[in-house]
Amino acid sequence: MKAFIQIEHDAIQQQECVDAVRKHSSGAISVFIGTVRSATAGKTVKLLSFEAYEPMALKEMQKIADAASEKWPIDHVSIVHRVGELAIGEEAVVIAVSSPHRKEAFAACQFCIDTLKQTVPIWKKEVYEDGATWVAAHP
Amino acid sequence: MTSSRIILFGITREIVGQDELPMEVDGSSVAELKERLKGEYPDLGTLQYLAVAVNEEYANDDTIVHADDTIALIPPVSGG
Image (tube, rainbow over all chains, first blue to last red):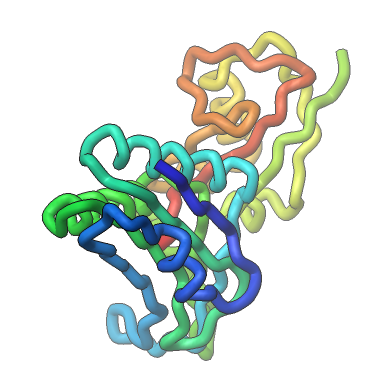
């Protein structure tokens, strides 16, 4: 299993993520794209600011790819997360998983994003017209 | 005893007011470290959780930290 793991400071190169998982024996590539949305709990979001503990985030992302590979018979994995300031509609994260059959590709792709949201040291701050909030920091 | 520097991320950086916090940690457990930090910066106790990374790995409360370890505070993550 090859893992293409990156923290990206500019716009994510979606095609590069997908191309990185291509394999002749793959019958499926499942892609998840996480995008910045405009509203949360009634407040209008101006932009999102993402920061990462980069060396640890890369390690945790690699662990996720390895775990997915243990759980399902997949071919390759890409996990790319962007950091910095993102406007509404921009892509924060792209995950691609290739496998011989689609069932495993879907399942592994979901596992990767679900686990990333639990374990990878990346933080999102929502910036409004009149303030900002670190998402999920407080109960 | 040499002073370590605790790297601060996200909201912990705003709570403490610095990117890094010098602290004498040699021989303390992660649990003790967190108690000291919450004592000095009570707002750290209001977070959903506060994890600690030692040498870029999540540490348990009973992990002992040493002066040459890289220590970081990991507030609730929100990637993706």
